Image (cartoon, rainbow, N blue to C red; front, side):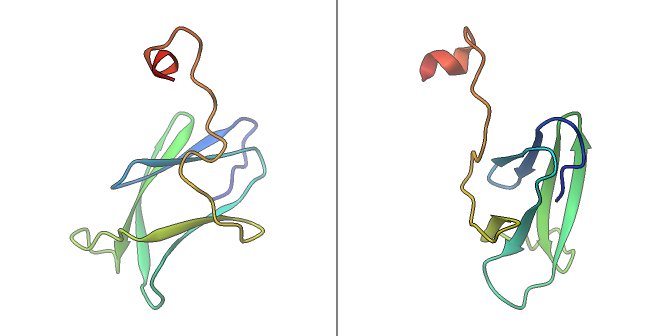
Length: 96
């Protein structure tokens, strides 16, 4: 995934709902943990982000549950990478 826009872009990966934020110009790669799996992605584009469902061989009954997300240097990223802070006064910010 490459963010060719001017603002941050959320990459949201199902089925776990993990989120990774790409700054303009950044490239992230989503790949299966296990080698030899052909992964196809079901993609939903929404304002500010992309949601992907990784499937083995495009079969929606074979969801890829173990995957990695890396940046263009090959660094493995964790869920919440570059997630913006919650706005002050929001319910989530108060839970802290």
